[in-house]
Image (cartoon, rainbow, N blue to C red; front, top):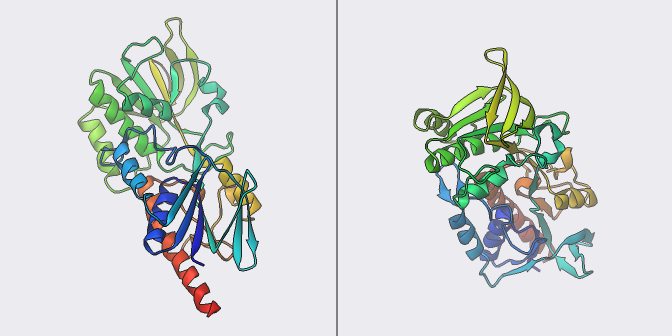
Length: 343
């Protein structure tokens, strides 16, 4: 039997499903949400090339139109267990599916900014998250709490990442470049708006990311302030006043802004946490743990159980797709070895 269950229809799950299907493997792809690619649906443009996110969504969804792929949306997988040499996957309705191997691609969730009460998200209308701003950019509706075009927008990095108080000491990897991307997008739509980015340190780790950072300053006049915002409060005219420290100058500062954008980090999704616990592959912060981060990063302690994408750690889309391709090769090797042993 050449049949694989993939849990999670995000970029990693779809890319892996497509590759395996092209190798004549029957794929059962399960997605808890009613839609595939749920974390991408509200994105406007992708870094670093500013290509429309919808184009990638359409191309990935077209890969699902394959006779070897069966997609189950609105289907939550509640249990996965070894059944002899095979695996049994059980959904919330009690339906079970027998497969040769399982690939976990259950993805991530964004940090709930309400947990940082001092920043005012959910309390003041002028405080939004990077997810909220992305929707505004996508539909060209960047407005303050009164429905006006903002004259000033402030971004705050590392909300829910590199933060002992929130319990996440790790870097979410994509927040820095997302802020740079969104700042440029804001300036393209609203050239007269002043844009500030508050940061601890900028981690431009990818190809062309440093160039984006430089362009944001030289071409779009985005201002960068090294410092953390300690508090946000509403003013009488419904703007947001922030208290912070410029750590380069060593001075405290106050600033009023029309919008405060919290760059929320990535956390393990509820599905990732639950299944990683059930399968005994739970690592730090609830992410799924691979066997080895170098040569066996798609494998786990259990034969036939594989992982890919941001269920392991924060990843950008291009890295996620590459990891899915890697997992597909490993899974094919595993299935072929099983068939040889059964001869």
